[in-house]
Length: 186
Image (tube, rainbow, N blue to C red; front, side, top):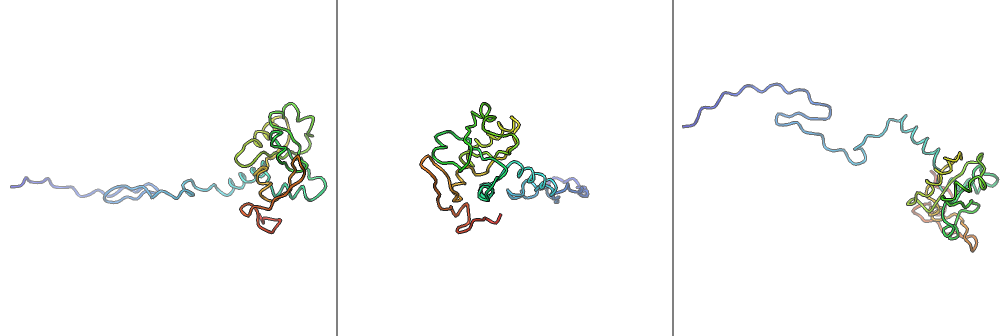
């Protein structure tokens, strides 16, 4: 003989689910995780515009710096190589001022005019030397931007550079600049 079972009460109506959650008769389940791109939602358009406007106030890319220098005349800024003397000798942007980051506090006023914006660069995207140089200059009262890509992308995009032996130019790397074109279209 089986034991008698207690009567069961009717199921209570389900409470409304929190946004993004599904309620079933069995359990509350979380939504499937968003893909890695949308796991954090994009910023509102006004916030995004402010962020990107600010980014452009702090950065210039290699192609824009090269175009401004190639246009002739005064570009309205000076380019500063913040690397060591050995790195400078290996190659640098033509016309750049050489001032290693460690020497900026002692020598910047001798070499730079505070009324002229400075564009700093170092080796490349894996090096934050240009960022440190830009910080040191900003703390001294200079207007400053960092050249994204540094010397590496200057060379990879096919722009002329100087070494202790003279001027050189390499073909553009098709992964960094369009083949056979002076402009990237950005």
